[in-house]
Length: 212
Ligand code: AMP
Image (cartoon, rainbow, N blue to C red; front, side, top):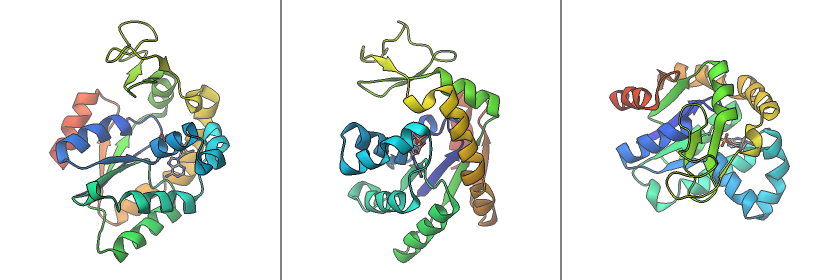
């Protein structure tokens, strides 16, 4: 099963992607995560995209498509995959469709998480991530037991540079201009399902499970 989890930054895609990945036994692939790792490792790609990412702008379509094309060729994707944060522009979506078509594949379903803007800004500014194990916390809805410390592994919590309020506004405007039109694109293909993402993590997961 080839799936896409779609939504604005902070809609909860990563959290629900983990759930779907376990439920369906398919890898969850986050282009944002791949890019963050490249930036941290200072690879040639990482050096090239570091500034774009810190501003909350989009990496070029050509680079993103190439990265995804390579990633879904890996062995763990033979029974399917779940994409989180990709595609983000119409050229990415169309380029990806062509790429899949060439290998006799297709996207089975696009799960769109619909979240009100005020909830998104609140979620992103309150998001904290463990430096060591990547666990996610939210200062409002899922605070760590000890301030700044990961409940799971004791690692230090940090705020993503692009989760600062000014950058969030830019990321959201990029989302509305470049990414939101994809809703119509996938709707017209009859593969879009919309889930109300303004609820608790478990309520949203239950809804998604019933749709798959
Ligand atoms: P995310 O973790 O999905 O919010 O992605 C973090 C950042 O990575 C974005 O703000 C972009 O700079 C970059 N990025 C991730 N996925 C894409 C994509 N599909 N197209 C362009 N840029 C991307």
